[in-house]
Length: 136
Image (cartoon, rainbow, N blue to C red):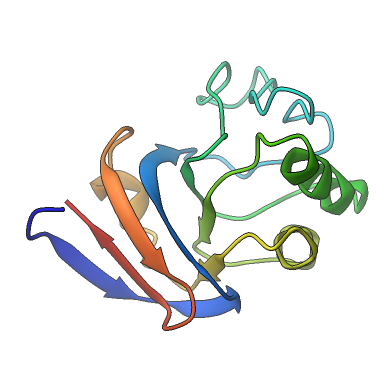
């Protein structure tokens, strides 16, 4: 990765991940919003509808919706189509528990402006152990 930006956040689920960024400016409901078999965002109200979360650094403000969303995140991992990492402005329990049980690195408390700064397909590296995100 070329020299870029680095920011700090809070560790929710430890681990390291890197990959292309996928941004959803809208909150994501994993139950009914993401297909657990394919990893495709299927919520038509989401601007990232039709995009795959598989292997991406998934950046979105926060989760929303049913507690079953935790299980959907776990299913994404079991099906090999989970995001490589999750970054939120503010985490909530549904996504946090899903990331923890699925072993997906996750962090939050990133500036909301980052949702406008990052672009889809940028390359990012996250070290959730240290709460850092680096991007081009």
